[in-house]
Length: 164
Image (cartoon, rainbow, N blue to C red; front, side, top):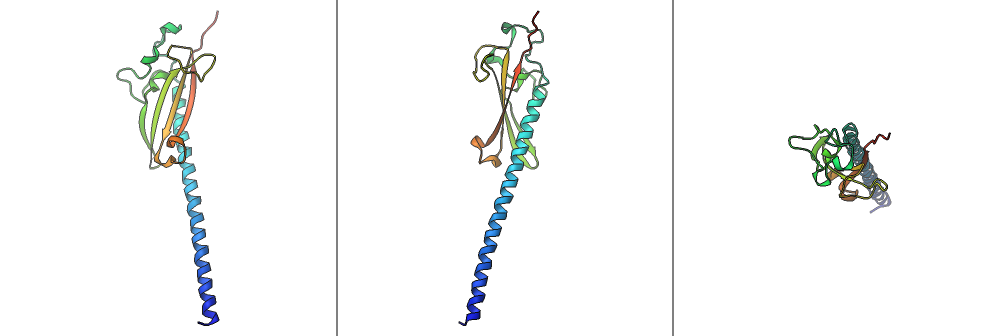
């Protein structure tokens, strides 16, 4: 083989290696952009769910004003005949399990609602209180890099007591 043939083969090898490197970088960038779009979509779904819950009553009982009158913790969830998105109070989102397709991607909305301590909003209670924490978890197979393949958002609903 002469020198020119060797240079041509070396140049082709170098161009092939550079092409592979560029393609790999473009694929990684495309994957990151897609993943970011899925996270933004999941956050949007979670925020929309929480925003809708913020418009609902604190408790099923319209006349409830004391802790004893609120729904017991084991009774939190939708009442008979209530289905998402036609809820009427915050705790109806307890046991929410709804599938949503957005932009061709399947998401699963999972909700839980529980009473929390009035002085420490991270302490879960089995008794009633003036605060309910709502957790919305948005899952997707495309969120595989995140813990539990999900984005989790929370909201604390507070019963507004009127003092005289």
